[in-house]
Image (cartoon, rainbow, N blue to C red; front, side, top):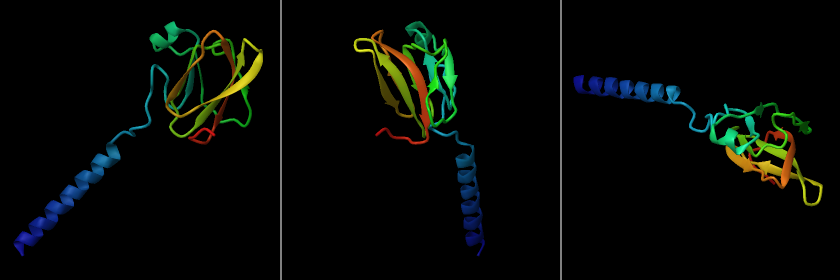
Length: 131
């Protein structure tokens, strides 16, 4: 009887420790990246901003239409999506044709725009995958 009581106490203590560890463990997917705080989509105007982990602008609101970018985000070289479950659509201009095009950036991914393109807008959407 004493052995069964000890086994029950040990099992209860182990279950309590496991529950405490799970409750206090940080989310593996929710994290900042290169100076971009979760859950934002950050813009880096230049490669220097990117290399120094210094975003020049950030957006985080889900919208149903595109937001025009301001002076600290329009024409950015890099865009980082630190959101876990939301994609970010970027509107940009292709300089060779003048056409407006769109790019879907998956959660926790980075987009690079060379000087052949100018990013002009963002729309954050509540889906984790791109069509």
